[in-house]
Each structure stands twice: as C-alpha cells, then as structure tokens.
Image (cartoon, rainbow over all chains, first blue to last red; front, side, top):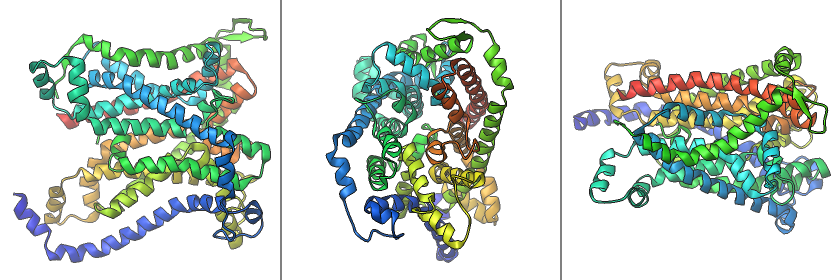
Length: 286
Length: 290
C-alpha cells in the first residue's frame, strides 16, 4: 500500500511545491535562533572583555581579547569550588532519584494496586510545589538534623521535584516494553532482581539516560533551595555568583565569565540526549 | 497494556514513598504548624486558629501579587503556546539541520535560572547591554529599573526566550509522530494548509500541548529567580510575583504565621489547577489507548 502512495507523493511535482515553503521556514528558524543566541552571544562577548572596555566604549565584539576573567575563576578556590559543589550535589541527587524511581516506576507501569492513582497524583503534586513554600521548612529541618551546608542536604531537597519527575519519565518508557518479556524471563528462571538488572534495565537504557538528564538539569538550574540550604562548604556556583554581584557590584567581566561556564555542562549533555529531549519533557508520553 | 492487580507492588514504591515523605510531608507539616500558631519569640507558640488564613485572604498586598501572577502566567501562555507551535511547524523534519536546531533550541532550557536573569539584566542595560543600548540609539526611552511597563516587557520577553523552546520541542515531537499517510490523504482531498493544521496536526499535538501548557503554567506560577535577579520585584512592587512576595515575607521579614498561611493557600491554588489539567490529561490518555 505504501509503495504506491509514496511513489505518488515523492514525485517531482511535490518538490517544486515544497521549495518556497522550506525557504520561509528557514527564515523563521533563523530569526528564532538569532533571538535565542543573541543574549548568549552578548554574555560570551562580555566575558572576553576587560572591565574598562565593558564600561567604556560600546563594541559588538571584544577589541582587546582577554581571558583574564576566566583565569580569575579557574585559579580562585572560592570561585571554582562553587562548580565542584554544584556538580557534587547534582550527581548525588541524580543517583538517588534514579535508584528509588526505578522500582516505583516499574510498579506503576505493571501493576494495579491499592491507591495507585492517588499516589501517582500525590507524587506529581510535589513537582508542582513552589520551592518558595519549602525554603524555610527545609532550612529548619536540615539545620535540626545537622545536615545544613552539606551537599547531601541539597541533593535530598532537590529530590522533592526530581523523584516525581524521574518516576513519570521512567514509567512512560517502561510502558513501551511488552509484558511478555517479563513473563518469559520468569519462566526461564530469573529472579526479580536479576531480571530487573540484567534484562529490563538494558531495555530501557535510553529512558534511564533521559531521566538522569532531566534530574541533572533541574538540579543544576535550581537556585532558591540550594542557596537557602548552604552557606560556605557546599555553596553552589549560582549562589557564588549572586553574592559577588551584591558585594563588589560591578565586576561584570568575571560575572559574565562565570555565567558562560555554567552554560557549558548543559550544552555538553544536550548533545547526547538531543533526540529524546521532547520525549523527556513530555514525561515519556509522545 | 493490561495491568494485573498486585498489592505487593507497594513494596517497590516504598523507597520513593519514604524519600518524598521526608522531603515533602515533614516540611509541609512544619508549614501547617506555623500557619495556625502565633509567637512572641523565644520559641513559645500559642494557638492562633484560622487568624492568619483570614488575614491572608483579606490582604491587599497578596491580592495584588496574585493578580500580577495571573496576568503574567496568562501573558506568557498566550505568547509561548502559539509561538511554540509556529516554530515547531517550521522546524526542519530531519537531517543535520534538525539536530542543530534541536540542540540550539534546548540551550536556554539548561541555563541556571539566575544566569538567565543575569543574561537579561546585562542584555537590557542601557549602558552596557546590546538590547538597551540599541533601543536607546533608536530613540526609544527604555529603562527596566525605573519604568514598570519596561520591567514587565523585559520579564515577559525573558520568559519567552527561556521557555518557548520547550513548547516548540514538545509540539515538534507530536508532529513527528504523525504518519506520512495522513498528509497524503489530505493532499488527495486537496485540503488547505489551514485545514491540515486544524484537522490533522492540532488533534495529534493535543496530548503534548496539554503537557506543555501544564508545565508552563506550573513553572510560571512558581517563578522566582529570573525576575528577582533582573528587577528584584521592582520598580516598586510592579514585578513582585507570588513567590517573590512569599520569600520576602518568610525570610526577609520572618513573619512566619502569615507566610505559612500564604504558602498553603498558594500551594492549594496550584494543586487545584494542576488537578484539573491532570484529570483531562489522563482521560485523554485513556481515550487514545482504547
């Protein structure tokens, strides 16, 4: 059936029809991408200028190219430790979220059990909770159990929105794996844990990757909770930036360089999940 | 897929349950606790009943913040959803350019919220920012730190910059799932571009669009960091949204009782709207699978 229709649709006539359409699309996309990239370009541009140049002559590209701003950040522990701290709690959070979400997502995707629908919505409702509501109680909770200003405190706090998200995404991916695979494995004598790790997890590897990416992302971009829960030892880079703005006021070059450096990890991981981003945002439901 | 009933599945959910109970229920109980008590300091609390709730519900300051919040969410949804669909329709379908577009479009989504704020703070400044400087050169009087309208425009444009790609990516994924045969059928019927969109593409995007709207509604309703970095809630109170007001009240002024009552009402509003979305979404899911 498809052969006949394809031959008709793919004839030369449709090509002549499609050409102008591609051109107008290209214009729209170019305009949109310029709109997206211009502010980022401006940040990069500023990070490569000296402060006198930033505040003095207005120029579209750096006249005296300098990497001093980056040198300041990469040689000063109070700056680069911010990146290390952020990475530590982001990785901790991703590992915790994925490992508790895997069995739960499996349960939701395979079984009906008492209260499952309510539980699912309750989980989702935590993704909707405004972090501002939780900032103060978290501060008190983690202070009282002696976890204030540790990486694990931030990692646990971010579980508030990352665990529900991970469950949702993984459930969507697991739904796509046919039940017969589970049953065949049991008949072959696999125990549940062995089946899960040896057979099931490789099957949803892309789902795990996407869920990990989203946990990484939302933990990486969040500021309010991570700033509230830390003071010195675990202070994230985002908080380091805000304090520098208020303290020295006008060190625009270093501020811009720090901003550029926070974009890089995200840009790197996007490349690996580019084909799954939409599926992840749709919580596995495309 | 048929699911079997098995109550032992609860054991698989237990780890999540404990973790989320620890990070959500305990803090939420603290909030409830504060919302019905009053204190004169020294950690001595006494019963205040529903006083804080009635105060919050009658407070003009919170009414104003809520009004601004609803206006903001409405504006950004009205811009981002149509724009996102439009961008998705114009994206290349496959090949290297599709990948390039996907990667570049996802870039703003992965920038930490306060860096997004910083980018726009710099970009809009009249002395050192490209946008502000250009507008000034053209002769437009633009200053987001002193003019309320300019501040609003800046915050809205920033959010459009930050999140339109999300709507576009989701719509794009929806479009990709439409089989080629549908378009061919439309061509045989000589359907116009508009009816292809209205009767083929839009219904197929319905599910993902609902998720996009749900996510954008929730996140715009909780927005804190970006406008805070750019405008600090000002000039005056003109861009003080609910979260900014709440943090000001709870951590700035340490008015625990009112802030807690405010938190609970705030949470309930979001929960109610999201529940409506969720119900519609799951019903849609069911209809599609039948």
